Image (tube, rainbow, N blue to C red; front, side, top):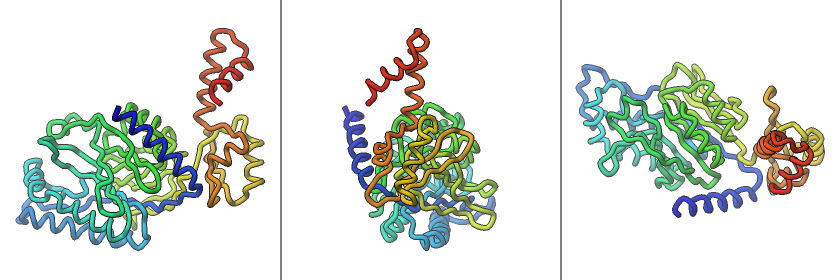
Length: 348
């Protein structure tokens, strides 16, 4: 019952957003290793917390100049490196919500969302979580890592929940580090169709990032916890649209969430007609090699959905599902045209 109500709410929320057409969101991701503690460290745990907050004050001051809507920080961003496991848990006892409360104040003062990775305790269990703070500094949602490593599960619990988190601009999904290796989670999100996937991680993921972006048809934001590889923002075609560099440990991009993926098959002339009518008010992005393009509405009042309906353009998922249905009919010797007609009759 709870899950059914959630699905209905997400559907209504998505319909309301779709009516808004052009939907720009400015995203920042900050990578890097954070605060390190010396082996011979003489700091108290409270001093470590203070040092951590000071570190994030300096990092955030660089990106807040861009006036972002959403900031993503790394996995375990509020834990100094260099501590043993036992020392980490002593640190957590002192840290409590101090770093979270600081980040909440930043979110509120700057009217932006902040998502960050942290290890936290709830009801006697420990979780590796991504917490999303809203523009008022309140918790908008928490995702708990579904697939911790085997070693990690000596200390923390795996979760089996992976619902979308709601923002005023759209829906957000989360994955943490090792999660990216598991198709079960990716396929679950692909069904839910998030606008953005947030990935705070100590593992870069490589090609998996583009795979997730494309299969979920979502913008994919990675905040990687080291400087030996970039933190990046990818579009739903899996292309990198912004990246940290050897000079800057953060990336900034304004993305338009009013977008849809379509296949080129059966749509060539329709896409030409769409562009002819709307000109610069629609963009059709072709990454090459995959046969799919992304339609993005730049119109203030006409959404990508309305444009697609106007020209009877078939969506990517619909085309693949139609191909499956025709294949099934062909296997039982039905003519292809009859199979197509049958599919369209049941999927208007």
